[in-house]
Image (tube, rainbow, N blue to C red; front, side, top):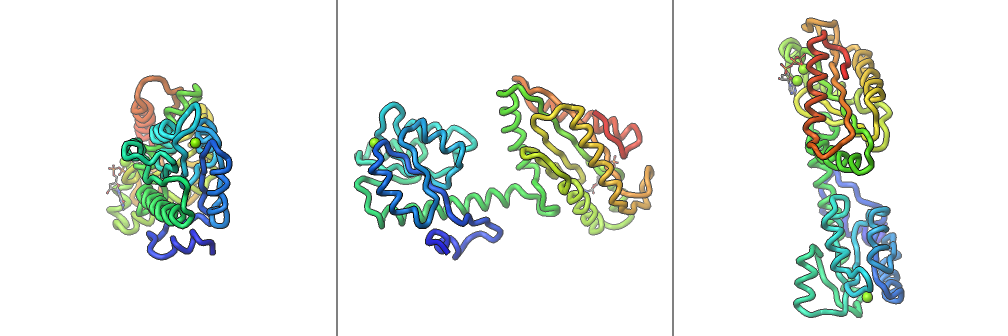
Length: 314
Ligand code: GH3
Ligand code: MG
Ligand code: MG
Ligand code: MG
């Protein structure tokens, strides 16, 4: 067990995923300074290095480090600016930044903390001190990640929840707008589920939702796709860089998969088993809000219901 690992093992949140070797990014325009920190951490962490602000931002977006040790004084882009940029992006804002600098005035330290750093260490670094502080902040970061993970999972079905979906939709809307790519969603709703509960009881209803959720997520999805429980007996899937006809094909596969589960539904008006109706919609995001996409999928779902249920519209 690595040193960093042993520290995290004690009072972690249950269900937290502990990285085997946390990843650190060390940024300094003087390679000799990087070398010192590399010596301190290479045994317990994967250490990436950058010798300029620009390079630091690139490494961050590629490697998503658990923590950054950031020099303040660097030519071109200084550490303060690097930190500001990291904190302004959703993808990087949660990575803790510790400034490592020889400028140890109170003004400098205050500015560093104001732009979002979690700590401030002065050069020349004392290995024991830097190690202790990094350990503390890594532990906090990993606990925060674990909490975020828990907060984004639906308690009943174990799949992504609405919060997670909303976050992904926001991010993918912006990504697809940047790249002018289509963004599809499919909105799924269990048919006559109130009657299912009334007939079989609420506990059986819960079990049914779990099985449907499992059927939805076991399918082969692409890397950036996300399936989530949108609420009650409604599920939604987000498919970036997907055209409407492909989204409809996928929706049809999913509808069939739930049908093939053959979960009996004796009280349904439209089938002898549990079925789902699906509405699909696609847009190339523009300046309008992503609510229009949700609304369109909802309209199509309504059409599928009106059209007799157990069907896909889009
Ligand atoms: P439709 O075919 O038009 O969708 O009819 P429906 O009965 O499925 O739709 P409606 O919106 O009238 O009812 C949804 C039901 O889903 C009502 C609610 O009690 C049930 N439900 C929502 N969340 C849960 C849950 O977590 N567990 C169980 N067992 N039932 C739930
Ligand atoms: Mg420097
Ligand atoms: Mg519903
Ligand atoms: Mg329903």
